[in-house]
Image (cartoon, rainbow, N blue to C red):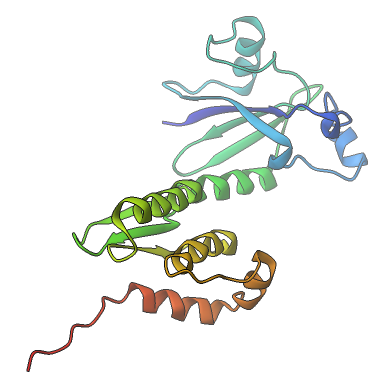
Length: 213
């Protein structure tokens, strides 16, 4: 079973010259469709396998009630996504153009949504909570500090996004009244992948207990 997704260009002056432009016209401007210029306006699990032509007709003649975009036209993108394949099609003046680069970009973005960026380990209970959304992860750690205190919760970042690591480090260091450098300096100091890996591994190791005498 696959999912149908519709992408349309975001509003704003920066997309004015991309709107309603056919694929050849876009390439003449030295561009290809990029996900950052689009917003998803529809997503639904499919029970059948409609053709791109059928999707185009439906979203022009009998649009679904939960569709938030405008009628399909040139420069829009139709995506069929399953567990094994992503197919992205640029709506052209006549027909559709498949977009392999955009397919890979969409697949990477979808993968990010399911990757664990960090987890909280509550030291008093031993409970571990995984997070896939960076903002939720940072907010949960901040809330954990407020309600539980610094001695009962620990955050471990798994993400490669140094911006997320920085925000957690600020909260972690702030527990003890210390300060970290500004973001740009901190990221520059912590951009060594080997050093980061070793640091994260040490944070995940359980604290050793002193042997009884």
